[in-house]
Length: 263
Image (cartoon, rainbow, N blue to C red):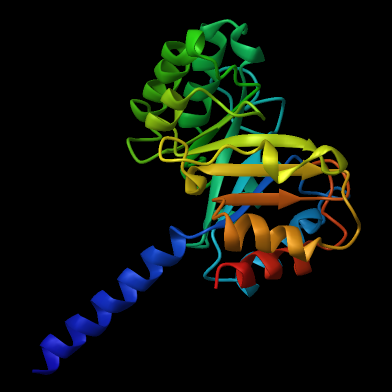
């Protein structure tokens, strides 16, 4: 009886943890270099580490971008990234995603796949678990190209479970949802954004959409967070008063508000 009860409790705990990781969360383009000054032990990312541990049921996706991508082909990242990325990966509610530029579909495909391969051969302790394809051209003419990029990720050392994000910044053609885990359907200045710009329907599910808004207010617009996460069910959200090379002024409150909106 004891063993059966123990198994039930363990299984319930695991299911709860998986459910938490599948709920709505924060997508942070973490283009901030981890060190404020040489040798300061990743101090620039301290607020990020703190937010992860303070919100253990909230999923986080962190896009790292050491050198407009991973750097030169088949190289390892700057030693500071090697030191600081494990502090993100050590948390079950956080994924590290590698940045890859695609130039609206005009970048040479061999360069794109070389970036994927470079991330895939990073050391296991700091290797990303997914790819963020920036500057995506998400019209019908480019579906096969980006699908090939997703396949390249899954066939690399990143594996079949690697998380695929496309960032067209606008509503994509519906075919993209069939091979993407997440699509940034709106990236814009905060002042230019309207909820009416989003398209949510059976072929464009809200849970597979992310919104990135920059140059916003210095305090979190709680009503907008509630609308996007709590009412519309958008998968991932990021709102900052700056660009992506600094921590938002109201970061801790923003994260807490996203967490609260889930309930």
